[in-house]
Length: 212
Image 1: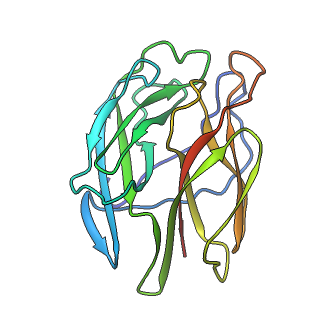
Image 2: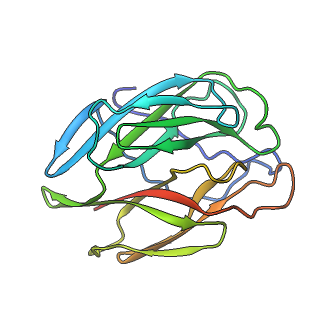
């Protein structure tokens, strides 16, 4: 709604849907384009049932960037009970392609319409009213944990948002933050085991946004 939201953790079907407590970060923005210092931040949403394995929907940024931005996407509805997330197939300075991605066991099927929310932001670092924002795209992320150092360190652990922003591996996957500190974070791509036990994932590019 305009003043609240509900969320929960969802596990793939091979698990028991009972999950220990985790910490989540959330970011809320009004739909549209906003200039914050030297950074362009844009928020939007799209309703679709397009499964990413079969294609994608193209969303044009209301205002094109001079370079490829960082991009975050998220399913914002629960119209279908199946395990689902979003997957970005392509990202450019003027548009991106995105679709729905279910667990590996059911990813070749169909899914009901869901709302995908998205946020794009100029890559780099800026400070606005003493809030430091860093947003970058990092290549070479796989199923093996990788350490990424913040170009500019924080005084304490920042709020961190991450998303796979490429589509080199067709197996379903999502970013998993292993740890986060004022100077660096550790991350990997995590696949589910709903179809088999193999969880290796090829090298992908991720987008991240850190705020404090």
